[in-house]
Image (cartoon, rainbow, N blue to C red):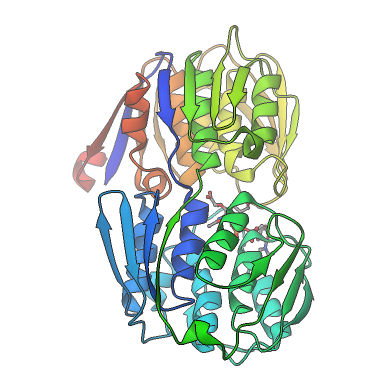
Length: 429
Ligand code: EPZ
């Protein structure tokens, strides 16, 4: 068991290079199965969810190895299409093996995926889409068996689900016919997946818009010849938003490199509304707060380009010390306010009612022993610890390590006082 020990009250200052995106790397790693090959993946974050995905790829027969900052995945000898339940339940992104295994061999056996406990998170849109593409899907005792040949066609998704868009993009690759996906999610990570799939020879167009076209490649050379390719994963806009919240929450100033302002617009708009000064150039964002934080007014989480639900907990922490009243409406996930009670332990004044959280800013947050309940909620508690007076202990740091590579190193780089400590169960109590 590991915990973060944080001394608050130090303004974060300096420079930070944003790492590769978790929510891009995971579907891309699953996509290495779509076609036999040796892939050099650069800027893939060294995080818990990636390590879990690599265990899945290895269980299917792939070889994976890190060479410094390059992750090499060799999927030529993949000879299985069934993912063990134990590995499926580790991460939500295990669901992507459904699409990539169907593209590779027309068969996939999986189980319900795991992931952050932030809502019901059904996979009905994935399943309905696969059936519309012509695949047979049988669900028995939790085992989901999909097989068949994609005949292509037009599919209109009932909701722009990120995961379903990415999964159906992959499942349609080996289609006998072409596929048009409508009402797609338009997140930058979906554009990155399209970039990878095109890089390995598939024809996919339209990602980043609500309509994606996938050319069926059934029976052509793609499935016969293996290839060697390299690919760079895009930057992690959620990691960037998290560090930026820590900087403005502590009254600091920092420059972020390897981050495109245009994919951060909704977040920067809210930070500016709270009083942050933001300077940008193509691949850089500098920000600081001259005075105390102002409230955020009303913020509603929405699919991209709206305010990301993955930045909601970090924003709640900022609002806890901002002047006045802020309202956050969580529209994407049903139970993504688990961090609220931990923040209240630190002195925050927060009320929730259904999808709404009302936050009255308080002068001081107090260092306390708190518990991370999920990935982004855990990151929000680390930020609260940096903003608080005294010492904060964030237990169950593993939640945070699933999605942030060396968070404590990054915060130390910006002058923050944080230690990660391994503790035995006995010590923890
Ligand atoms: C992706 O999850 C991200 N994960 C999530 O990030 C992110 O919060 C989410 O998109 C929304 O932006 C990855 O990319 C690996 P969805 P995903 O399908 O694909 C409902 C993080 O912290 N839905 O767009 O699971 C669902 O219940 C994580 O990095 C159905 O009803 O999100 C939710 O309410 C957390 N049926 C909404 O749609 C379905 O079949 C959005 O889910 C699929 C989804």
